[in-house]
Image 1 (cartoon, rainbow over the protein chains, first blue to last red):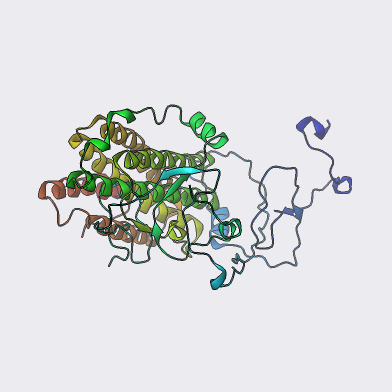
Image 2: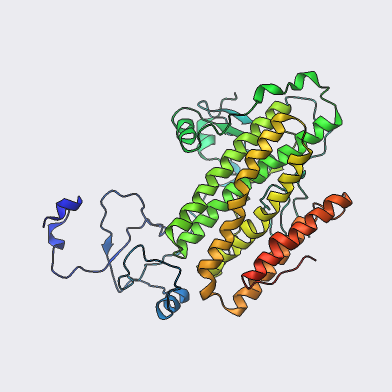
Length: 150
Length: 264
């Protein structure tokens, strides 16, 4: 049978061995996986790289799956995922950051905008948020809350 | 439409609150959304003419304020379901469950669109400051499955569970056909949005320890306390109505999942 039947192109013939080697996701510098199905076969797994096995991964291989779960993808011995620290790239210096403006690029039109005038006397609204400044979603039909809640 | 400095636009980083404003691109992206949600905005938009009402009318202003906040809560819900989808993927939740969370984010963006159009029909957004850089739920350091359960509790089991009675109450009280049509559309989607949290708990249940359930109960209790500010000091009838909703739609339903919480 030819693997071309399944649309698998022979990208690297040297990898065609009888024993497939473990692979790891292709990732960027920050460790984010390169998504998109463009034929990447991953990168060779390097056991000398830093590997973190998350506790719940270990536990889930030891406990039985609940009956409700049906297998969508046949389980293989779990390849250890290279886990790199996710670091935000350094941003521009503060004085180079322009003041935030409305998202009105030339190829867009306003979906929501304030009135041009006449609202100066209105109380400023803000979202209802937790002490950690996490906005509380869900439409409870109110005018919102204070920005920082006890 | 304001012209933007291209370099400034690409380097845009939200560092402070700003007036809530939203944009629409049209073209291919609009066609895609209309294909996914046919006729989503087929509502009686021409039935309301704000120019016939005094802009200083208190009822009109209050309507604009409530619906402007409504735009934000729908927007936050879109971000929340997006975060939930990622959390589900990170803990290897069933694929169809992940798909539902992603699809609900699209539902919420449709709601953002409808409510934004309603606000503009009423006369425009009222002054409303937000920092959209903080729109997504805060990412905790918990293990992936417990982190996903936290989001399921806060977003779905509590937040969306309260949306349905709030929207239903508003729908019963709304007199204008346009407002009723928008509310009916929002309400139509909230049932499944309030259920996905319980779907996740059904799948994750066998892995949750007693300590996990105690933690999730505390998360639910805190979320209830935060929302209760919206009715605690207001109309007695509405307060009783929402407190009943909390008991029936949140506390009892979570108890069936082995999670104890309370309304403080």
